[in-house]
Amino acid sequence: MSMIKIGVIHTTAATLQSTSELIKNTIDDAVIMNILDDTILPDMAMENNVDYVRQRWITYAKTLADMGADAVLSACSTVGPFAEEADTILNIPVLRIDDAMAEEAAKIGNNITVLATFRPTLKPTTDLIKRKNPNTEIKTILIDEAYTALGNGDRQKHDCLILEKVSEEAENADVIVFAQASMASALENSGLDTDKILTSPVLGIKKLKKILEENN
Image (cartoon, rainbow, N blue to C red):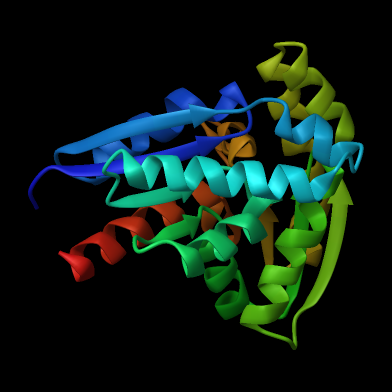
């Protein structure tokens, strides 16, 4: 594959390095163009003029397309619906990072537990899974203490709180879904059986690679 320009829109600095590294390790000769707007999540949390947030996000996607991006990736599940809308507007693929994860979860089983640390992420994630398989039974769990810990720079506490909840729920679910890309760090060196735990970054970027190869 020749040099590919990939635009990535972030809503938190927590996904910047990990997403960039994963793209580079997955897609040969990828050139990454990042846009970070860390005001989006506070606006979404307060439901503060969400339509303006939507317009802002789509404008970022358009800007990346104008800069020559071959594709745009939304690194945030909370704004996934905005990415889907942008995909219908632009002439390049715009992918939400959690799309492939939702597809996989819907295939694995009908009893799905969705974990999130940020409340506004729960609905877009569960809606997406339901679209993939309307017969799924979804249990949602919010671990907002983990979100607070991450905001305070305490990644270790963030990860531990998530893993505690995974341990509590593992026996009762066919599959556990981490709603946010920023949660994936909890599995690093955890020693857990990850066969029934799905995170969005690896699956999402593999799907992005497949789309780019098909369009090349």
